[in-house]
Image 1 (cartoon, rainbow, N blue to C red):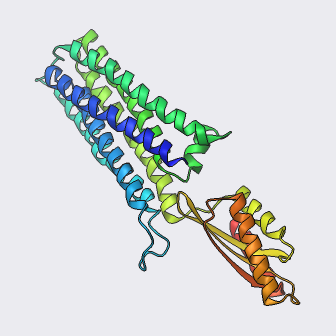
Image 2 (image 1 turned 180 degrees about the horizontal axis):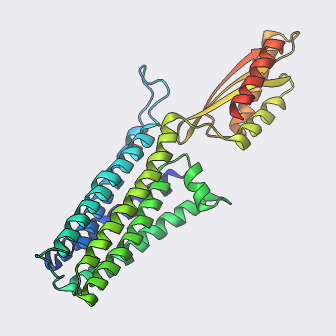
Image 3 (image 1 turned 60 degrees about the vertical axis):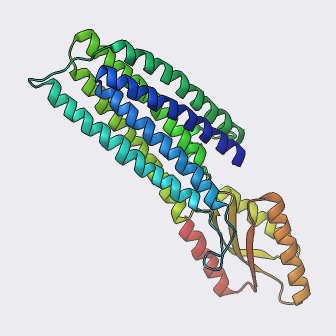
Length: 322
């Protein structure tokens, strides 16, 4: 992923959400709409989330230390996971709580109609325009690296968390704004504030679903994902194209950061090869992998003889992947 593209999408989303949050709070004060309050908290949470993503990117750029010999690349995954938690707790749970509270109020003896609805309509319209700009920026930046993947595949397979997170947040924000606009409109047209409560509950459920998707995807990245079958096949082909490498006995890969892949392989060499020839072959193999896959910055190749024992190990490795 282009680091510049990811940062551009985050900054666009942050700027939009800060402006939207202020305007929604103003609209809530004038209207008393629970949908507007839920959307206000949603925008505040989103603004904090974008700040967390920027912080994660910054902290991940620190150099290696003796305690962290592989660097801090996974901090980006950690902060993306925190974003999912914030979206669930602050955004989803608050909206559901507010929706339930508003529902009981609307169906009780102290029902309160929405006041000055023009504020809500005006703010929501402006918010939809600003969120559309942010969403469009995220789509444009994602298309630079998405290739022929569907949007679902891109979100599930992306190793850099920022763009998928911003995409889902912006999508949720747009749908949430439409739900808020629908809830306020129905409450004004029917004179029944219960529709405002329904809109608030729908926003809370929507945010909860998005938070769960983000949590599962970032959890997988935190635990450590491999390069995938197609990329690993390319690595094996590159290794076996080197004359000094007879075959790859088994291979392990893992992303230790969005832009850094660890490659570890046991390779079979000819028993008559000298140490100098084996070293030459390993250097050539590493060069081929890096030329094909620039993110493969850490490569460890272990030369061995192809024996029954190592063949069984490779078979077990293949079975485990299957």
